[in-house]
Image (cartoon, rainbow, N blue to C red; front, side, top):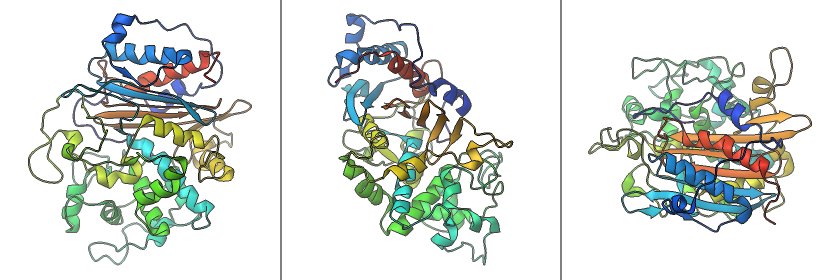
Length: 445
C-alpha cells in the first residue's frame, strides 16, 4: 500500500490480517448464502457491462455494498478463468458531478498493484539475459552522488541486490527511518518531492531519479537481506534499473514489452492533477474533507490531496499506473497461462512467486506458508498450490488483484479509500469475492 493519508486515514488491516481473509481462495470452503437484493434496489445503482447469469451474485455483492456505503461512489470488477476474462462490470459512479457511471473501460489509479508490473518487467529483463537478480543495483545505476559527496553516507547501499529490492529486504523501512523533513519517525521519500528538490537544488517537484539520488545520502534502516519492510522506494529504484538496462523510459518498456503483447492498450502512467485526468479515467473522492486544503506540489493554488498533494508521476514504478479492472485481470491471468501471448516464460513466472529465504523461511528453517515474493504476496502450501495477491491504496482509490490457486483471477478497484465504516473497500470485499468464487458450481463456458 502507499501512504500517507491526509484526510480520515482508513482503518487498515495488517497484512497478516488481510492475508488471513483472502488466502483461503480455491479451497472449496462452504459458506452461508449471501442475501439477495431486489430489482428496485439494484435499479438505484448503475451497473454496466454484459451480465453473466452464472456470476450474478458478484453483481448482488457490489450493488449491495455500494447501497450500504453511500460514501463509496463506484467500483469495477473483472474475473478471468483459465486465461480468459469471463466477467467485467462497472458499478456506481465514475464522476458524481456529471453522474457518469463506472464502465468496464473505466480506468482507475491502481496504486501499489503497480508493483506487479514492475516485478514482471524485471523478470523479463532477467529472462532476456540482460540482468540477474543477484546484480547490485546502485553500482549498476552509477548515479551522481549529490552535495559533492565522494561517497554515500552508508556503504551498505552498494551491496543491495535486485532480489532484495523485489522482496522488500533492501534496508529501508518507512516506519523506522528518521524523517529529515519532519519531527516524526518514519520516512517514505516518495511523498516528499518538494523538500527533496529543494535540498538538491533541482526543479521541483523532484522526479524519481532525483529522489534516488537524494537517498544516496541517507543511512539504511537495517542490513540488506536481514529483514522484511515494505518499501515503495525500493520499487522506485527498480524502475530506474529497468530504464538503465533497457535504455528506454520505464513506462515505455512496461507498455511495449510486457502489456501490449497481451493486447493491453489502455494501461498508462497516471497524472497528478485533476485537469490532466486521462480519457475514461474516473474521478477520485477522498473520504472526509474533500476541500482544496493541501499544498500543490507543482505550485499554485491549494488542491485536494489526491489531485496534487503528492506527485503521482514520481511514483511510476511503485504506484503510478492507471488501468481497467479487465486489463489487470488479463495481465494476472497471463501468469497462469503463459502460452496466451505473454512475454514471460514459465520459468520467469515461477520465480515471481517463489519463496525468498528472507521472507518465506522462519528462523528455525521451516517454510512459511505466507510471504512476499517478487511483487506479490503469496500463500503456498502442499498440496493445495499457490495463491498470490496485491493491494493498492491511495487517498481516493483502493485496488486489489487476486490470482487464486484454482485458476480464477479477479481484479477490483474503487474510487475512494474509505467506506462508511472507515474500512478500505477492497479489503472488505476481497474475502467475500473469494467466498463467492469458492461456492460457484457452474462457471460460464
